[in-house]
Structure formats: C-alpha cells, structure tokens
Image (cartoon, rainbow, N blue to C red; front, side, top):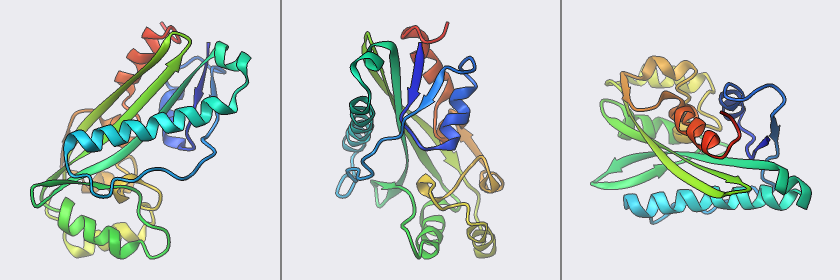
Length: 207
C-alpha cells in the first residue's frame, strides 16, 4: 500500500524512508500554508489539542488533493513538531523563527528558555488509512548546559535555526549544545520513528 507523506520536511522524509520498502513513499505537501497558532494557550491540554488540530488540517488538505481512487488505495501521514518551554509556570510554544530578523528572537530563546535548563519537544502524528484515522502525540525532554553568549552567537551564525521548530536542529550543529535527552531522538528531529512504525504496522502498511 502506498504511503503519502503530507510534509515538505526533508528530515521527516528521510526518517520515513528508513521504515518503508523502496517506492512506497509519495510526497504531497499541504497546499494551505496558513496554520492556527498557539497564542494565548498556556495549558498542556490546550496546546496538545491545538497541535492535533493543526495536523488534522494538514491531513484534510492532502486528502482533498487526491482523487477518489487514490484515497482508497493509500494511507496519508501528517505530522507537526513544536518546542514547549516553561515561562513563569506556564507552558509556551516556540515554533519556527520569524522571517527576516530572526537572530535576536532565537538568541533570546536560548538565553531565556534553553541555557542551563530543560524543555520539551512535541510531535503530533496522524495516519489516515482505509480503516480510519489514528493519532498520537510524543514528547521528548531535552536538556542543555549553561551556554555562553559566544556559543549561542556561533550557532546563530551557522544559519541552522531557520525553518526549525524552536530555532535549532538537533541532527545538525545544535547536537553540541545538547547535554542529554529523555525519550525519542527522532521525535526531536521531527518524527517519532518507533511510534510511527507501530501506526504503520496496525494499518497494514508494513509488517
């Protein structure tokens, strides 16, 4: 059965290709770039609900691009990843850095929310198969040591934060900034491989 990945992320594509036989994966990105945000949401339950809603919208977008025959013969998988930090006892979502002058924003994220403390990376995944839809949210705790401004500026100068949730890529140069993690590494990269494999197995995509 063909699996359609509703994502433009090369990282998700690479992770998913490792689970599938060659030729089984097709990429159909969502057409609508506008997504609901997390403004005003500070509780774990509300953030999780919104994250799943965003993934559901992506899945519906991709589903609407397919003809009736394709819908019956394939599965669709969509995902979204965010970084959740604590600010004054409230949960705050850090998405991708803003376009334009992103460096000051990401520098502040590192100083306030990353350096010398821990945060969480959440990925929501939804799989639609002929048998129905199934979704999950996977959370990984990431710990960073105290980071000097010179180290933060070095990382910003790599340009790697652009386009990445929370402004860093653990699979790249940011690996040297991470002291440890609890949970799935691939989840921080953008797709919790173990959990996704279980979804695909239950749906009959792989054995």
